[in-house]
Amino acid sequence: MSTWHILGAGSLGGLWAARLSRAGLPVRLILRDQARLAQYRVAGGLTLVEDGLASLHPIPAEVPSTDIPIRRLLLACKAYDAEEAVAELAPRLTPGAEIILLQNGLGSQEAVAARVPRAQCIFASSTEGAFREGAPEGNSWRVVYAGRGQTWLGTPGERRAPEWLEELQRAGIPHDWSDDILAKLWRKLALNCAINPLTVLHDCRNGGLRDWPAEVAGLCEELSELLHACGQGAAASDLHQDVLRVIDGTAANFSSMYQDVACGRRTEIGYLLGYALREAQRLGIELPRLQDLLQRLREHLAARGLPVD
Ligand code: NAD
Ligand code: KPL
Image (cartoon, rainbow, N blue to C red; front, side):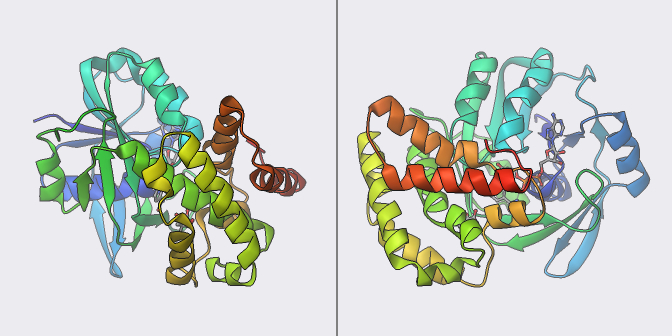
């Protein structure tokens, strides 16, 4: 049985680590450096808060430079950290190592795969929700499981699910193998592009976008055009209706991008709207509403001293 090495003991990484570990599966956390490792050891492990109940999981941890070989890696950092993080671990990866990429959006998966061409990259798209409670970035080892959801996993062109999915079953991680994971990632990207930037610019919860129906409809139209041009027609199907359904279904929530900006954290815009517009440029199509949205969002981020990519 391969050990689950998990890089990024943040929200989603912590949620996976705690569930895998409590199912009796071997797990090791990879923390940034010795200082974080020392803090983690003082905390005595990761705490998972689920349905209001907290449980402590004393999962072993290490730093990237350790020489233990890695056969299976769950990469649970943000999209903008993924390539660098995997490059640091490359010397430890065994030939054919499996890397599960939990990053939202698109672009980081390609960059990781190019860095470690001998590894098998499995892409994931998750609708689960988790956040870190308490201390600021890096110092919180307490993860709250905030929203039930589903994680789709897949490797483009591979229909057969790997046998280790059974371990996710055992750990109670809701999942499905997708034989078209790129369609899932594109669909989520489109939903995020239609909703998240507008919630930041209009300073509202997802439900507040009901006041901007024409703007939402215009973005959905251009996103559908882009999806068709990218050969992702299936991901474009009923996009506008789905966006309206998500706005209603999550009306009381703040989008992830809204929360990032509100907390002064870097957003993943470069892997969402930024990626969409780079693809549009590559294909030679004009998407003036999405372009304008990106411009406004960048101005908003720059005014708050946040990275615009
Ligand atoms: P997070 O910021 O809570 O956790 C990321 C962790 O990775 C941090 O602890 C960070 O210190 C660590 N990290 C970054 N680079 C590292 C390195 N080189 N070595 C060691 N550790 C490193 O992020 P998150 O919310 O868990 O999100 C991870 C990905 O999952 C994102 O792409 C996000 O969009 C996606 N996602 C998150 C959720 C959620 O509810 N949190 C839901 C769906 C998708
Ligand atoms: O995934 C989301 C997010 O906030 O990132 C939703 C709820 C779908 C809004 O785009």
